Image 1: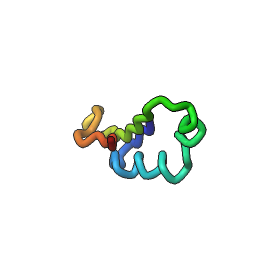
Image 2 (image 1 turned 45 degrees about the vertical axis):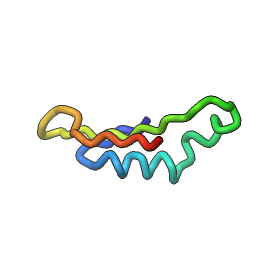
Image 3 (image 1 turned 60 degrees about the horizontal axis):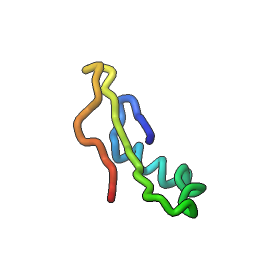
Length: 54
């Protein structure tokens, strides 16, 4: 899971993929869920549009 402040959930997911955060768990055999989230400092809440590909 990657959380971005004042950015997008898509950018958070892109960072997960580019940096290979889940790579060491792939051989484990269990399903992997990558979650990108965005927090708005102005709204002081999570933004809509969470991103987790299947």
